[in-house]
Length: 274
Image 1 (cartoon, rainbow, N blue to C red):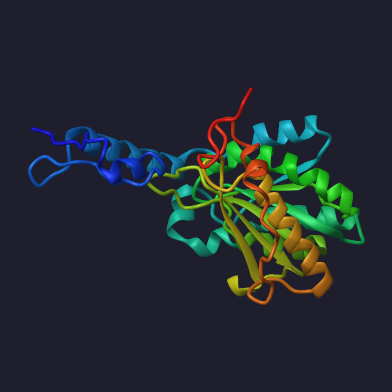
Image 2 (image 1 turned 90 degrees about the horizontal axis):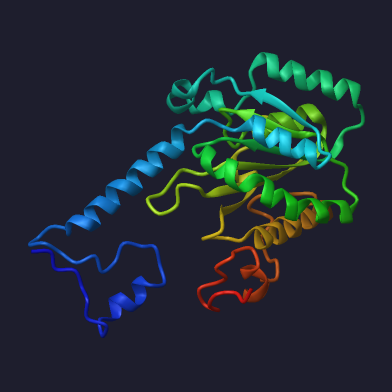
């Protein structure tokens, strides 16, 4: 017989209401109850599906065009998903055709730009498909206020984080930020990661990048992520560096402002009034 905790005085049940972590699942003998096991298998299937879901670059490009923003579709040196998963190094560089396409764009638009925004599927196209446009909507107004020049949004199929270094170098960009799907977890198959680099160039290690992770409605809100990224970009321009020598010391927004991104509000504050 399944023995799932039901006693309201059980402190684990109170904590369970505040987290997606798998706690207080109950037991059947020495095993999990059937429902908990099925939930685990479902979460595992969601994570696997997120890795193999196609990158909806056409939909993102179309919606960017509706907002008045150009985009360029490129491809990494990984020819397909199997190569991408087996050869991480191929996802870090552009294909020869894509590199030449980007060089041609740079030749027709000389002078470089302040910022290149790159979007790559990474290990969860689900995250990119869901969160790219809402996040960029929060970021774009701040970029305009700073007066930074931008390249078209660069969409990279089968891309990894370091591909943004080559994109930035070819475009002559002062800064790059790549929006990429993070490795899916069993409670977060749609987590978006942001990786920021000042003076990008091929061959940089992760020590030269700043990471903002878990951008999604159940994690770090779009507004909070944009706030932190803008702080890093301003400080990078002032200090002319990024990575381990640039600490994220952005002032934390109030819980009320962070909750605005989620219809459900923040769990510490309760549901939003409508």
